[in-house]
Length: 112
Length: 144
Image 1: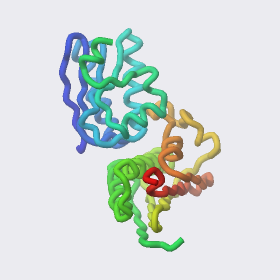
Image 2: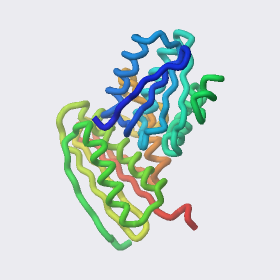
Image 3: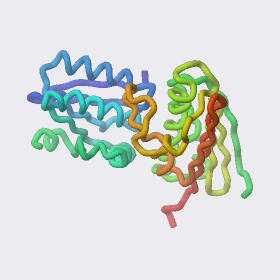
Image 4: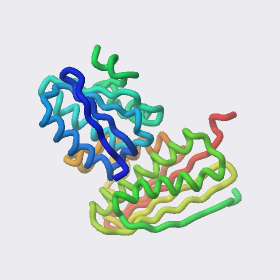
């Protein structure tokens, strides 16, 4: 597996740090991991840390939007931090950023 | 236009070949000394096209995907072909956010991304015969 995800918590926010390249092949694995962790933890919100994602295609849009839909039903918030230029362009092009904002760091994301 | 270099490749419609295909394409175009952004554009477009062939062309079943890359002095043509089910209406499939498989958490942005990351996108498809995606990109457009 060329993709990994690490979890940490800050208050009632789950931080999912994704490491590797995100495409259709790896997105299913990450989705299962994140959904499993959300059920286990009592976190309300989720922040995706993209600082270690070197490549992402449109599979990343599906992954983030899917989590956004689940979490917003329970009044939780979804955010993205530290997306590189390529990743940012894909999120901006798809309009995801209107629902899931991109911040520079975790403190900024949690403040909002 | 004079052809500088060319390759043709065939691989199985397995999802771990998405990474293989985009890395091969990126390595091949690096001969033209593209910018990092141009390489990222090519990797993304190839990844989208190969993913489409796997998910939509072959619908997860075993099939063969063909990829060819032709290099010119400052541009590349990339063709990705499957012999899968084909696209019913290419114009509708090209629309942003359109997906024939909403249950799969797909965004429907594949063709939109290919279109905006490459300079030219042509889709040739026939029901029951398969789909060919032809894309071109000129390098150095931003360098001036």
